[in-house]
Length: 211
Image (tube, rainbow, N blue to C red; front, top):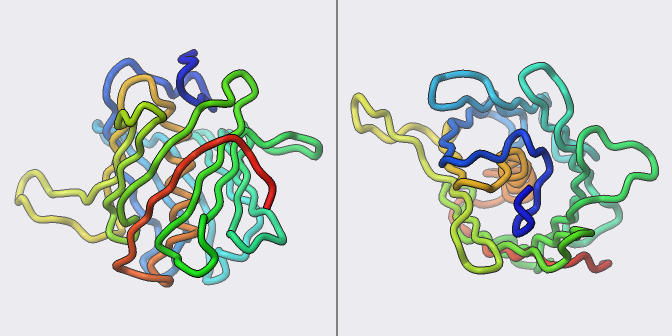
């Protein structure tokens, strides 16, 4: 296990760069579900949720190809900062969150803070910069090293940029791909297209503090 990064699932930490295609399963509702494929077209992750009231869901579960829960994200209520908590696997009563996600500003939707509590390394932190609705975000670790990036997908045969319902998640070596995808789910919930299209996101990750 890399002691410099947060690891949710060891099996998704690779020694080479990983490029995933993320496909939104509905164009009509923000957060309505995703499927994720590797560069060979094999299914890697899925997240299923249906209907216009997805934002009211209290829990999101990222699953592998066989439906096993890899990461549970729970909306913390009440919270003025749209706070989310992350748990390894399927959350059970009494489980302690591995990390927390919240917006840093109640007024400006373009800014938020990601807070991570790691028992064996409380100094782990990340910074996310960019605009998720435009599928343009970079995730940096505490040393300002790029660990993952969200960007628009271009059709390699036509060089045409595809719609925002399909995009790339590019993860650097030794960074947990499942954790990166979990951050995508949270970004989609907090910064979905129904909220704004042109705002920017600047997020940081640091030890947990209460609202």
